[in-house]
Length: 105
Image (cartoon, rainbow, N blue to C red; front, side):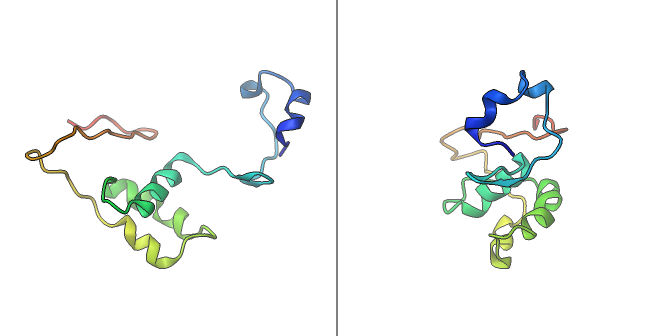
């Protein structure tokens, strides 16, 4: 994977001239898939602000469990799906969508 200084040497536009071999972990850190990132948000959520659908958690659980920096106790933090109560809610929840998901009704 090229470092930022090498990007000017790559054919542009970059989105249509993809590299054939890329590494997820590079010199400047790691690029993780969006769905795994959402799982990391839930694991790091100390104030119960993140709620994930159970079907989504089931889909990402194995990928997170295989990650070098995740320990088994952290996987338990993914928990189970929960719904915010309609009453007493001061703010409207912000929904996150991944590929193939639809807006809740």
